[in-house]
Amino acid sequence: MTWTVASFTELLDSEFPPRWAEPWDRVGLVTGRPEQPVTRVLAVVDVLPTTVAEALDTGADMIIAHHPLLLSGVSSVAATTYQGRIVHDLIGNRVALYVAHTNADVARPGVSDALADLLGLTDTRPLRATEDGRGFGRIGRLPAPCTLGEFAHLAAAALPVASWGVRVAGDPARPVSTVAVCGGSGDEFIPDAVAAGADVYLTGDLKHHRVADLLAAAGPALVDAGHYATERPWLTPLAAWLRAASGLETIVSDTTTDPFGFHACATLDPVA
Image (tube, rainbow, N blue to C red; front, side):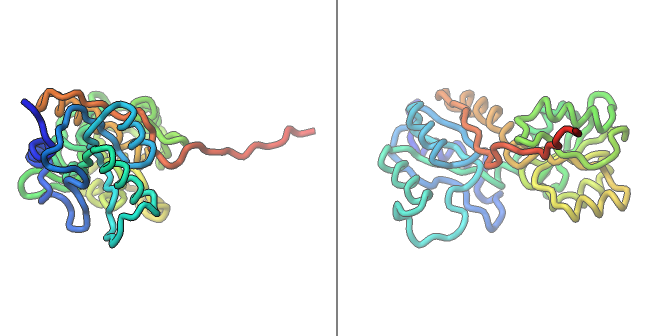
């Protein structure tokens, strides 16, 4: 089969229907003429100058991204901003761009399924479910109970962790069996993890006061593994599905787009 932007968009829309996206979100086809051929695909988390350069270097003519390039309303795509320059580069090089964001978060399988699978969770279900069985986040069980400290090391070994590693709130000796996860920014789903009886909730972008309040209330332990690190695992099953569904070469981006590139620790001068 010869794929075009139109037919490939139809395939993606069938797996990640745009109507599943949150009202504030911007998903679907961003650039690309319907009749343009699609022969090679690059899967990325973020659409940045570095990932667009990677698409051009690898000969990809379609980018599938998780985060929208143009999330807020715009009245111009002049090449005076990096987003505008990207739009011009994509159009000028005949590279189509498609975004699957919150519609991929709630899909089954979706972003949080990939995260749960990487951590070895079984019997998973949505953390905040919709009426049709989809939903944000996942909750499941570890194959065998462990301590919170052991789970933190498991997460650090399994995930493409942030530069600071994983941040953990809770007693390292606490037993852990039931685990809730959410790819990306999952702070708002803390109440769902509490209601579901999770021993630990792993996500990204946790806020100080929510974490402090939960610990004071003897709630579940919390692990902040970073926004990028908890969404990047989805690219691998996404690419596998695209290869099987289309037969096209689909490349998972090698470019790390976590904006936090390093961390620094205070050091003490040796005592004289």
